[in-house]
Amino acid sequence: MRRRDVLALGAAALPAVALRSARAQAKFPDRPIRLVVPFPPGGVYDAIGRPWADRMKVHLGTVIIENQGGSGGALGAAAVTRARPDGYTILMQGPAINVINWVAVARPLYDPKDLEPIALLGSARFAIAVHPAVPAKTLAELVAYAKANPGKLSYASAGTGSMNHLTGEWFKSLTGTDITHVPYRGTGPALTDVIAGQVPMIVPAVTGQLVELHQAGKLRILAITGLPRIAALPDIPTAIEAGLPALVSQQYIGLYAPAGTPAPIVAQISNATRTAMAEAEFRGILTVIGFVPADDTSPETMRAVVAQEFAHWTPVIRAIGLKLE
Image 1 (cartoon, rainbow, N blue to C red):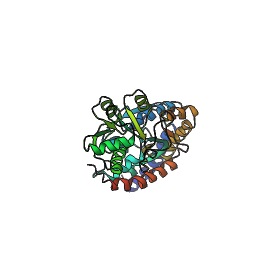
Image 2 (tube, rainbow, N blue to C red; image 1 turned 45 degrees about the vertical axis):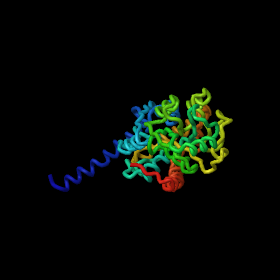
Image 3 (tube, helix red, strand yellow; image 1 turned 90 degrees about the vertical axis):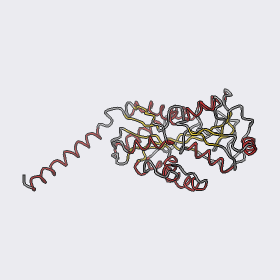
Image 4 (cartoon, rainbow, N blue to C red; image 1 turned 180 degrees about the horizontal axis):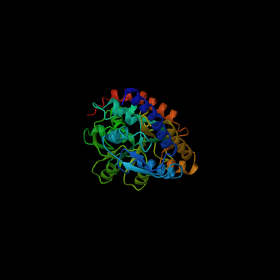
């Protein structure tokens, strides 16, 4: 076959390829979407992800949640960056986790640029909580006890490199306390051991489950790392009110797609999310567990939050010397 004939055949094939791609986008989705939650069940990501997936049935069809825990959320995120960019694999992730992975990890598992922001869902705050056996009823008493007993206390987190870990290390740095970090593969298993008295302290994101455990006396929340106070826990002060004005830590949570996902598909998922987030019933489900739903969920807002989190957390990570393998 002559070279000009080969080129002609290739040129003729291009419109066909483009047409198939356009048709695939036009009928999206025609099968279930996979939502990767980069932590085991039992934490704030599940508490947000499951009602979101349920709401999407009307707008996008079936959404299957896949929990891929490990490396503080980095394993699940890395898996999504390697997925086909067709809208059928998306990630629920906090921008700050991307900062930790990129700034503190010696060999990052993925590049944040390989994730395309879809929508901002809102933010969760963290709690400083202890097992009832710990002789501290306030944050000040906890700091005093830790200083009087260096190395005796330990705190559980959702994993090395998680926002729980960063918040715990920041707390230690601000208070000058010696508290050992005990990483788990998610908040669920961490809470189990704290309730059992295996670990005396935990720094979890606030969820409905955490509120219930506090109200049942199975653990004691001493402070919340952000304003305002939580309606379900009106008597629990913020860390600012408790004497640590610099301890403001909240976890923004949003949706990402693999870089290269067609813009119309990203827009379709984003628009479906915006519609759901505007529903009073859905916002109520999120608010009652201590989550703050976003008013503007657009990809542009999500990109702005990503930039904001890099600017905020990068100097903190470097100041406390957080380095991860």
